[in-house]
Length: 360
Ligand SMILES: [Mn+2]
Image 1 (tube, helix red, strand yellow):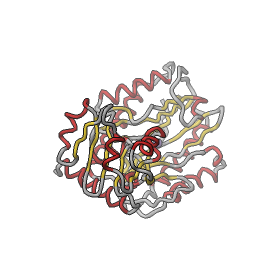
Image 2 (cartoon, helix red, strand yellow; image 1 turned 180 degrees about the vertical axis):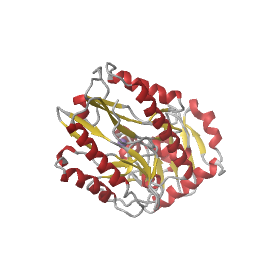
Image 3 (cartoon, rainbow, N blue to C red; image 1 turned 90 degrees about the vertical axis):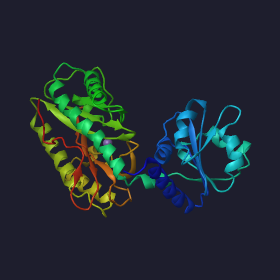
Image 4 (tube, protein in one colour; image 1 turned 180 degrees about the horizontal axis):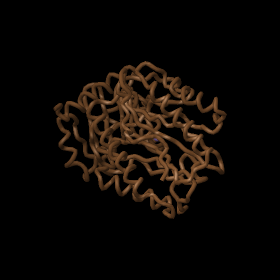
């Protein structure tokens, strides 16, 4: 078992090397998932500064005791109204300060420029995100645990869903089940879309009641120690029309064939193309308006992305979703999503739940 400190020190070293390549000599980390990635620290108010030879973690009185356990890796700095992060930066971040443009407030940016001696900052977005694309064994384990809770949640719902229940009741039961069975949190707000609402790819659950003859799409995930899972299944409440069954079979074919090509060395856009070609050739290309998938980890949507214009190449131990869908406005919609680990041999699917059409 690798010591926890060693895991974070190893990540910090990787981050410093990558930052240095972008001339970032000191790196002010503010994005929550990136701070967590290099420290494992949980607090609503903390900052990290990595310089060439020092690591600082700044937090306030409420978290200072729990931060002390990180003192082998970080110098812990107490911040307050009297000694703000900007006061600290004035003394420590002057050379080549990198900040994450996408996760810093304009207010804080102004403070840095006006109150500290720093007159120039460098963009440091995506440095840590790129490292995070490749999951370490401990990360894979947590994602697998989160996926397994979601798998069990789906089976639970097969016994629970019946006509007359509302989308909100179904979402609540699913969320309650996942939390009762080991989820620290939900990976994201669950999507439950029934009937004609199924054509909204990201429908929030409503008071609409489930009826016979329609699809119901569940898109949900659990979170375990910070790591997300993501899966979607569409099930039918019988009887279904021939058109519903045909469209389901089409999406399933696109899902299975694109998933089967998820291998190290392939371009993400090529995986998207496999699914998109199948759906387009059947005449439904205009109704598949989103990308095929995305990376999953500390964030529910992270690099790499799989869409027609994405330029990443698949690599070992990336964790991605494969989730084609067809959405027919005013009629119905459906999506099938698996979470999978990229390898150069077998396809490791974390969503072990069957994909053949289930009709309740
Ligand atoms: Mn997804």
